[in-house]
Image (tube, rainbow, N blue to C red; front, side, top):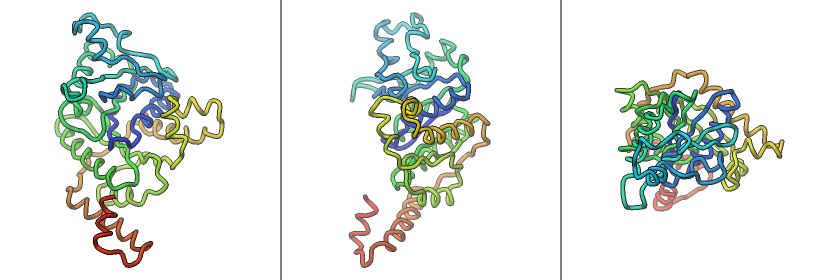
Length: 290
């Protein structure tokens, strides 16, 4: 099974991806996580350091693909999860999306895809063009990480549109949304009421989730010495259990941008109007922009 994890930049995709990978490994699945971001930090909480990237390795081999072996690019991480980072060119010097495509090509040539029960692509932000959409060509499921905010749901809607387009020619489905570190879910519920998408899990607003990223450890590793965090791991195990069942998923029918903007902004403003009286039109605009 192949998963492609997308979502708004900074929403917590990598932290979520690493914990899902460990949860799948805890369910006796052999997992490979592939970081698809030039920052090459997707697998940081699994390995505790920034592993050499595909680009780094190709440079040392003078770009002779035939001289690269799986052990040159695949690193072992926490919980038995194997890790790969695609990397990318220096800022402003090339196409990071192209590197993602080449990473997939190299791993297929190494027959790495045949060695794992689950391959998880952790993909850069909400960019779904060119090479950054390449994981959707190979994935069985897309998973979108969001929160209860306007911008994250707007990004989720654009990603849904990409899934719909890819599903025309590939056996790709959207497994669902994961709400990350959110105290409420009213905007999420409003969105899925208009654009039916399964919700796999809503992770509560827990500071340890953010701190785990800074520590370079998954929640599972931190919980080994702090039993009070075991309940957080259960959220990720629940996601893993749903994925393992090979859910039906959906081919989403995204909402048009202007319609979605109106839907969410009107809902948000109506909510704020219950809290704030006599708000000017200019102030309401500021609320939407914020």
